[in-house]
Amino acid sequence: KNQVEQSPQSLIILEGKNCTLQCNYTVSPFSNLRWYKQDTGRGPVSLTIMTFSENTKSNGRYTATLDADTKQSSLHITASQLSDSASYICVVSATSGGSYIPTFGRGTSLIVHP
Amino acid sequence: DGGITQSPKYLFRKEGQNVTLSCEQNLNHDAMYWYRQDPGQGLRLIYYSQIVNDFQKGDIAEGYSVSREKKESFPLTVTSAQKNPTAFYLCASSIDLSSEQYFGPGTRLTVT
Image (cartoon, rainbow over all chains, first blue to last red; front, side):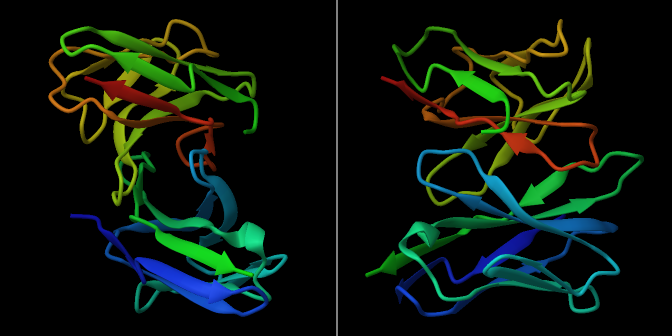
C-alpha cells in the first residue's frame, strides 16, 4: 500500500531560526513529490514539485530535496518568519494506468514563536 | 485560493439529514477532487472526476455522492449513510490528473 510518513509531527522554533521537515514514502511507481503549506482553516497551497530526476528545488526561503533511491524528501525553511506557522504536507503521486492519484502525508505542524 | 470557491465556509446539520457542499472553479480545469481532512490525519480522497459526466470513487466514498454535469462544478452530497460526517472538506481541481492540484478554502461541516 502506498504510504507517506512525515516527521516530526509538530515543531516549535523561534523566529529567524532554520528548520528541516522530513518525508519518507513507499509510493510506487513514483511520479512526483510535492510539498504543500496549509494555513489553519484554509486549503493547501503548493510550495514545490519534484520529479524523479530532480534532487533540489527552491522557492524563496523554502528548499526541498529528494533522494529517490532512499525514497526520502526534506523541506528546509531558512530564516523562519511568523507567517511560516502552518502545516506542511508532503504529497507523493504514483503512476497507475494513466492515473496519478496522490497519497498525502499527515503533515508537520510548525509553530514559529517571536 | 486560485479560482476555486467552496460554500459555505461553515455548515451545521442535524444527524440524518443529507447536505450538499458546493465547489466551483473558473480555471478551466478538467479534473476535480473532493477530500476529507480530520484532525491529525492526512487528506483522504472521497471522489474525483477526470472530465465532465465522469467520476470515480476514492478511498472513502461510502456515504457520499457527487455529480459532474458542468466542467466548473463538482458538488458533494454527504448522505445520512455517512457514519461520521463531521470534518473539514476540501475541493481541488487540476488541468488533468497528473498536474498540480489547486485547493479551495474548504467547508467545515458539523453534524450533531
